[in-house]
Image 1 (cartoon, rainbow, N blue to C red):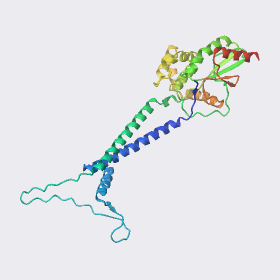
Image 2 (image 1 turned 180 degrees about the vertical axis):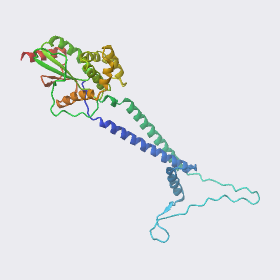
Image 3 (image 1 turned 90 degrees about the vertical axis):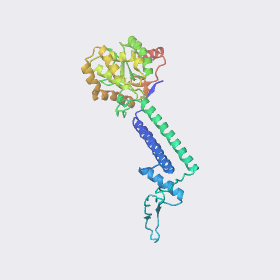
Image 4 (image 1 turned 120 degrees about the horizontal axis):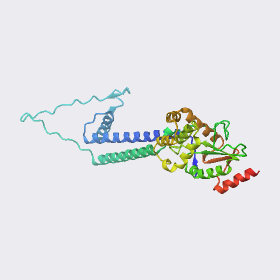
Length: 332
């Protein structure tokens, strides 16, 4: 199935914020629940959250609030009960040993509720952490730039002077443009079809390749940059061929494959210092985005998309169907 283009890369950042917020709320819940449990069990607590939990538990036990909203004078001013002064237990005169003290055990019902909240909060935190980890691991890498906010060109053109022509007949009778993604499996399936048509009609038809990397493919944009960097040394077609004939080796991978594309450049005998500089050059990425803008302006929504003399067509189902289409256009 043809790959769809989605220019809304900003939504990925929004997803991160939502997930992080949910985790923060879950962590807050487990901290409060933990503080309440410690307060109920008599364990010393020092942080602000724990102190609030202590006040809540103690006020619940005694039936009194820690803060009196109206004083005895009835003037409406808020007063606080003075803090109790801790005192050492009196010593028994005869033995000199302080009397035995006892602690109040909180009701079993309260403890069950607290432990239940603790378990629920812990499960929520673990679930959100696992979901966030999976999302960050599997989402496309922004380094590729294929998810950049590319907008349609105001005056989109099927072919420009800078477009890469795979064939240049002296007297062109037809122009076929393909907006492609080097990592797209459908584009890879069409590659041998296009190559066969080029051999048969290369002296009459101009075949043009234009970049249209999609955000769903992590290495589509760096592959296009490798092709454009090779084009600056006059070797676009060689890199174009190399990328499609090796697609199964690097395509659909979550790993960054720029080093693989650099190896291809070395195999092609390119000047590697120049290739590295061109690959990292912002103008190279801008050249790719220029093709994307034209594609969006022409109604391209997925890859591969073919335009025949400027008209977008449904991708032919086979070589024979594509050949028939070309023959019909050439016969007009």
